[in-house]
Length: 224
Ligand code: AP5
Image (cartoon, rainbow, N blue to C red):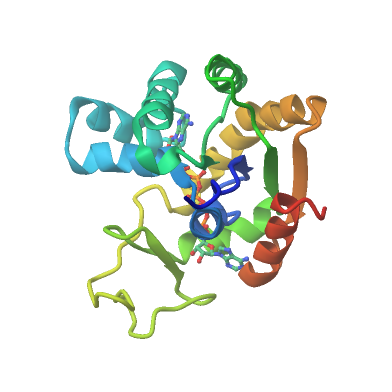
């Protein structure tokens, strides 16, 4: 048998529009780990019109945070049961609060596992408005485009399937301002938490996606 692949357990942090959803699939593909995006999980619930989804939609559109217990339960379920997570994971959008970070620690230590790194995509708030309001999404695949920065080949259509692209209901200026406020007040302390554990790395996310990726990769292969 082949020797087991190297494991990677990492967290990608950053404000809305920093590029988490752009970079996380690259990490997943390169390191053969699962990509767990709590925002995507909630949007799946909204799409399926579950009671949780209906409750979450109100919170998401107001720029707030869904309860810690619900979010921790979702991540726990994936880490324990998703076969794609056997080599590790990249967490995108979780943990967003100190209680979520503490519960993740408890969950991993009870499995005899630990985090390798926490990488924060650093970028000024004012650069995020144009990124978020120009974002286009192909929901079935999770592919993201930008009207100006990475336009699809045909306007409004996915390059691979030709299906229509959509915009998220929380991707407007007003909701974005609330999401940013929530990020700084609730998720800012999470960065401090990981700094105190010596796990935190910061990357300049105002550069092109390929430069951001080169710098991310350097963290994971231990060159930074
Ligand atoms: P979530 O889906 O996690 O949203 P978010 O954190 O606001 O992040 P985004 O997906 O908006 O941004 P991104 O960093 O992925 O940016 P992207 O790569 O697409 O959460 C949504 C909501 O769910 C939350 O507000 C909350 O209510 C709830 N929720 C989720 N998790 C929760 C939790 N753990 N606890 C409680 N509540 C939770 O990039 C954006 C655009 O920029 C794209 O168009 C892209 O093409 C472009 N772009 C990317 N990189 C670059 C670059 N380098 N240069 C130029 N353009 C770029």
